[in-house]
Image (cartoon, rainbow, N blue to C red; front, side):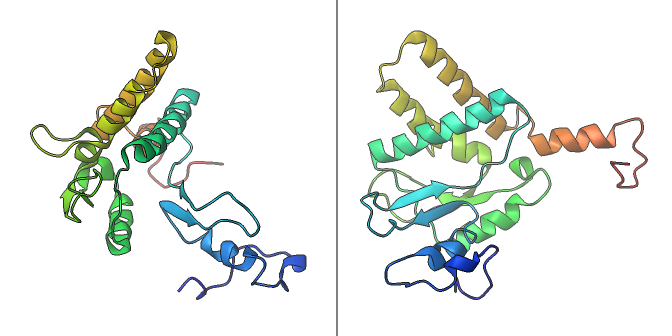
Length: 206
């Protein structure tokens, strides 16, 4: 089903190519299709190997926030490899999660399909959870994603000053997931709607 639409970008000198030797045509459409992660086949004549790319992070409002998310995703990818974590989920559930994620204040108002256990060789069992439960876990129940990131960090034997910065990043992600820290969307919406010059007419520029 990847080829049911035209590519977003194509170059004149890359239209007529041998698909047996080059994957450009496939990658052109494949790279615009996935909304949360992208499955990346190895390039031709390369030893890079198969990869999965996180794709769902938005630019944040501050340098600290951007650094926190970038570092957290790196640590999460390492934790997945270290503990052989299982995040497999049917695409139908991924698509449903994306629809729910578009709702206003979804971090508080929505629940998302997620695995009941992300440990190695766990059963394919899913239930609906809040972002807080997915990331921070639930006492006496599901072990949150952040728990595994913390376990991985403990294995790194980092210097105290570096560990302190990383823990600040992880703590920020935890509180953003729990709702203690508001999302950029909530902040921007509040800024606009409470601005003294805003006339509730959807006009935000001149």
